[in-house]
Image (tube, rainbow, N blue to C red; front, side, top):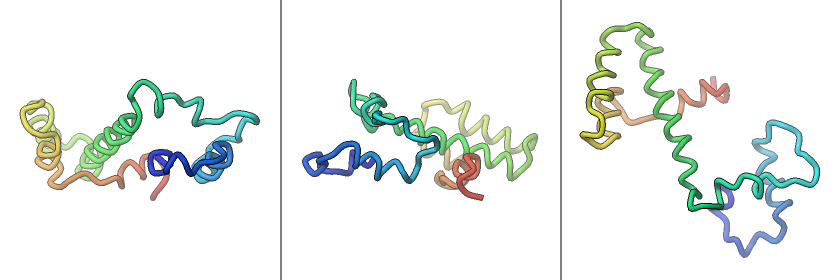
Length: 121
């Protein structure tokens, strides 16, 4: 996302830019003489661009919906029925946000994904 929020004419050195951005999130040691941004073609080639991040939004929705089951009990019949009636049975008949709110009682929050990913307690 750093690339998408940057004026490309202001990036003089890709390696330095990437190092600065990636040092906050790198999980593995950097392989010398490589650049993640030029190897990760999803973000620049084929019209995919920022659409790639819709996967993360799907993870937010999934984790938040599942957290309702964690709160109420995984085998809670009422929660299962609410998920069936408000999400699965409705399909594409209403806007997705309306369906999520009908199930969860509120708009999605990122907290459950952060917790499931071990980023936040």
